[in-house]
Length: 407
Image (tube, rainbow, N blue to C red; front, side, top):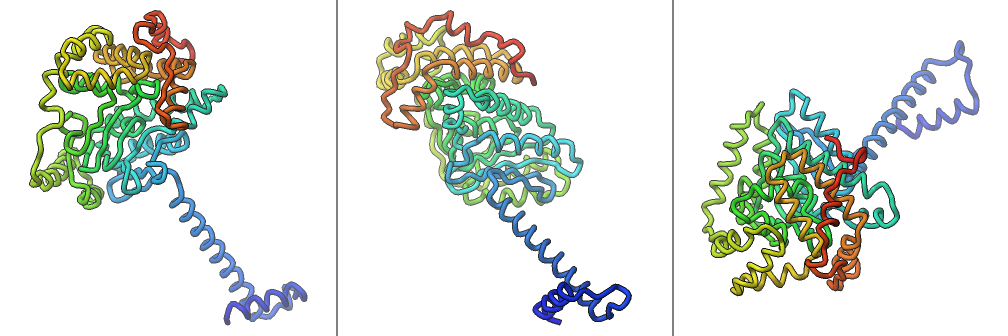
């Protein structure tokens, strides 16, 4: 019997209900078929809606083979991290950590351009201006997620195939494996918007070779491709065209150990190493960076650069003079103290700094000049390094009491 006939029978039954005792076998069969069709229609509709919701979600969380897969799914926004995404990723990450059938986690970004270009700064700025809780909750929950990645019990592989800045650094750099490609663009440009290199920057940056970390933190210098690995940030380099194949080989590993994962990553890196390599972009400047940025204060770094007078030194001085003086002093102390701190203590310190920035002036001015009006005409307060009081910097690092970050 076709669906149209079943529907016709249904209308007849609705108009002329038949008592159960006298109901014919054919009518009963028709009703059963109708119920089956209705259930199937509901199921199909539900599956369709679930598929649409999943594909449109800001982050996709799936289990494939032995791996949990996190896909940041805001390609039009360069996969910028927002609070909703954080709240989806964190509990799933904890579940995978305890799941005996999950042996590794892979995180990647959707689209061709970015892994994750940063946090949703515009939303945080708006919240900070109005006193909305988002200005507290975003940083608090972001750092809790970053710490969960840093203490994750299983291999965590970040495929940083594209722009990786700010919040994207926090989602990748604390994991066991960070795989860069020729499309990777890594930077911590926060001093240029009145912020500081957070998401654990106070932990990993001072642990890079020499003074590279401090140099990157203060100037916002951008590293590209293989240089991300050469600086000590990425653990592996794989050609972008091989990323999908790498992911497939990782998820199809049968109950892999850490050594099994390392073996796959090394194999793919060797394939990529066949391409002609270039010297590290900062190779010729490393001696100067290590010497000029070895100082007891930001002011001393400025003096070193002025005294050196080389084109490289003058270029860095020009860049630093555009940054927020408050952010520079905050960042210098952040990395100095973070060099001897645990990851958890660094996050506690950085949460205090984040809230200091929310109370201050330069963050809102930096976002306005760089991201909103885009006039690049920042009016910092104070305008000069010498005007940034040490007492004020001390207050930025002070305990928040019961509002401190707890890990």
